[in-house]
Length: 295
Image 1: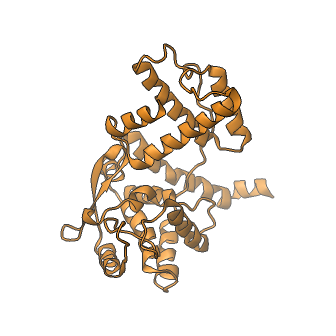
Image 2: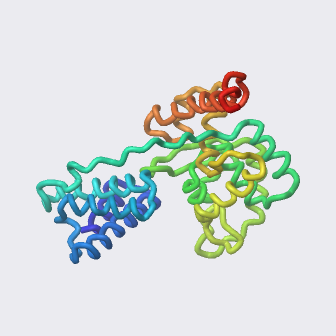
Image 3: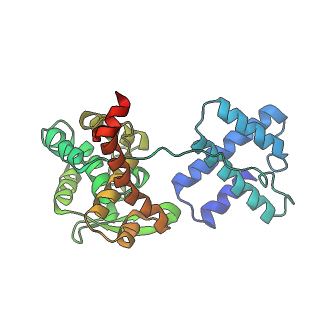
């Protein structure tokens, strides 16, 4: 039944390969738990107490509440599909709520930090062209790390100065490219050496393979540790930084929504609150009354 569900979301729902991988992993983890604790391979007809035990097991393993909620979301979708097939009459997820947690504020990199990255790291030749392009493409386009890794060679249009991105739910969007970034992409095109199986991907590693998301994360984290003391230094922070900087520069929020590929305007509005967080940080560090509290 799990394979049937995965086929359904791949064909009918047209979910991206990345999303499919997550669903498969989540359902596989649950299936393994049911087999271990209930001695059965039947994950369709389970009692809600099994779900609750699964949550406890995940919590005890140190998994974050955000990750646990993603697994619960996968299970919720699976059992909705089982209801649709009339395999069950009541979903075991019916009374299971997502775990409550306070999301950590994502503080974007400042304009000064981005300039420091350019002048003190990129222009001093301390990184390879590929590493520079990973950072600059993420910052100048706001795309997700998975979208960067999956960028196809045929979807980079040098004549129109734009890239075609296939995002969540296989939704396509076009993003313009600045001349400097375009020039670096052209230079990279001349030196990239993909193997026979990865020629259709624009970015490839030294072995000619498609870039991995972990590799992209490590590059961003490595170089931004040089220019910032912020704890979060991930590719998603660069996406957050793009949204914040273009909105601060006067871009219309509806246009930014399209570039970022947000289905809801509310998702884009999160970036307008970033300045408030930065102001709070400045206040805590510089306001006389706040300084007195610390002394």
